Length: 205
Image 1 (cartoon, helix red, strand yellow):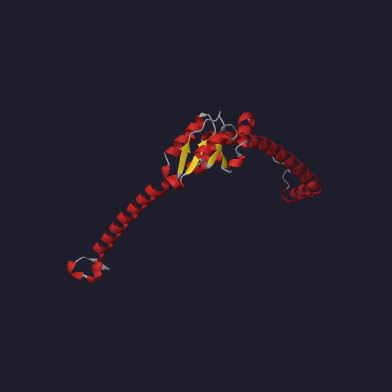
Image 2: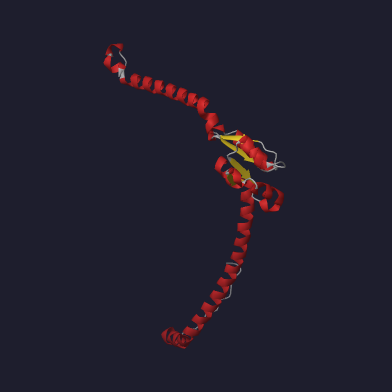
């Protein structure tokens, strides 16, 4: 508006648009930085991984490398009292292993954390949510199981198809057998040639 009210500056519309865009971009960037400094610590989702495995360390690196997602990684002692640690650190989300049934002690420890009213999410789902893709190890296991099922299904389908073809061919043979003498008679009456043709294969062709 200032540049339109005072035209003697000689600013063209294109220059005016460029200056407006530049000023708006600077102000918006400054506002985001100020908002992040003032409220980021209050709005962060505190996350803890309850697993001592290489895949847990891999997921931890992904969380740390993506601070813009709003997650703050908290380290817990999985062998200690999880409930007291969750209350002390004010954990919001707990990432748990997919194979909890193999660790009864951890399962019991997590059960004691239910009164804390936090979010529980399995490792695969958390990895997909943060990295926007499924982990390679999970895909490899899923692919193996699916292809194992597909292999069994493929063998069954092949046998079923062969049986169906044999049944269909037999039915067609029975249904068309009364017509064969008429077809042979029409061939004889038509050109007098043989009903069945035989040709010896020539290896030179």
